[in-house]
Picture 1 (tube, rainbow over the protein chains, first blue to last red):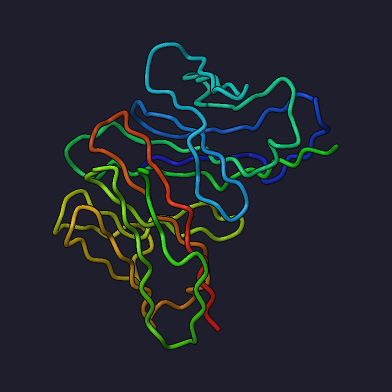
Picture 2: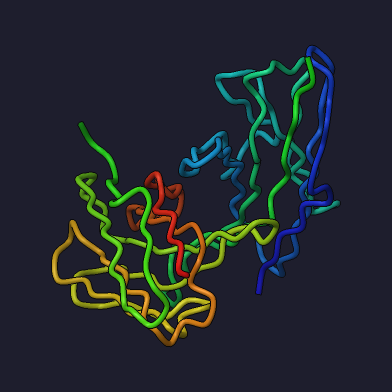
Length: 117
Length: 113
C-alpha cells in the first residue's frame, strides 16, 4: 500500500521569503501526485498535480513542485510567499487504476504554512 | 454553477443520536467519497462509491453508513455507534479516469456533545 509523509506539521516563514514544504511517498509502483491547499473552514482545492512527463509542475499562483523518483519526493516550493498563502497544504498520491480498489487519494497529514508580516 | 454542495455547514447533535450529512454534486462525476478530517491527522477515507447503487468501505467505516441511490447524491449517516463523531467531514467527487483529481465540497463541521 502507498503512504505519504509530510515531514513538517507547521512551517512559519516571513512574507516575501522562500518556502519549501516537504512530501515523501512510498509505493512499489508508479504513482500520481497532487498538492492541495485548504483555507480555514473550507474544502480542499487542487494546487497542482504530477501525472507524467516533465518532473517540474507549476501552479497559477507561483507554487511549483518537483517530482523526484529516486528520492520518492514531491516537495512544494514558492520563491516568495504572500500573506494570502497562509493555509494548510496536503500532499496526496494515487495509484494508477488497476481494476480493483478505486480512484481514491491517500493524503499526508498536512503542513500548516503561516506567513508572518 | 457547477460544484459540490455539502449541507449544513455546521451541525450540532446530542450523543446517541444519528445524524445525516448531505452531499450533492452537479459535476456529472461517477465517483464520490467521504473523508473525515481531524486536527493533525490529515484526511481519512470513510466510504466511497464508484457507481450508483454500489459503495465500499474505506479505512474508518465503523459507525458510519452511506447510500448511493442517485448519481448526484451520496449522503453520510453518522450513527450512535461512532465513538468520536466530532470532526470536519469532507465530500469529494472525481471522474473515473486515472488522471482525474478529486474535487471537494466545503465540508460540514459536526459537533456532538
